[in-house]
Image 1 (cartoon, rainbow, N blue to C red):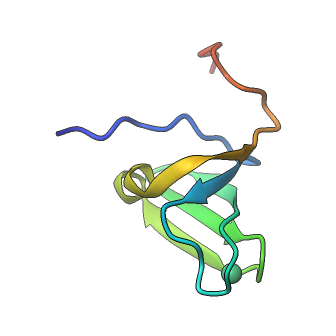
Image 2 (spheres, rainbow, N blue to C red):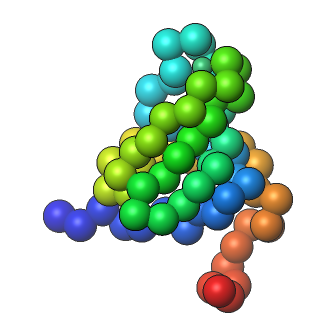
Length: 74
Ligand SMILES: [Zn+2]
């Protein structure tokens, strides 16, 4: 029942299953660790999710400044 870990990095912009109440569904990743901190691109509000919750709510990438990935790297 493990949820796959989404390879996100600070600077990625992601979409979640549910939009923010402000109507925006684009979130900038501002911190990655045990918790993931996301900033709403509509209103600027920050939310903090535990990693597991983030992976469950993750829907897709909007933009990835680091590239599409594929190279595991560091
Ligand atoms: Zn918002």
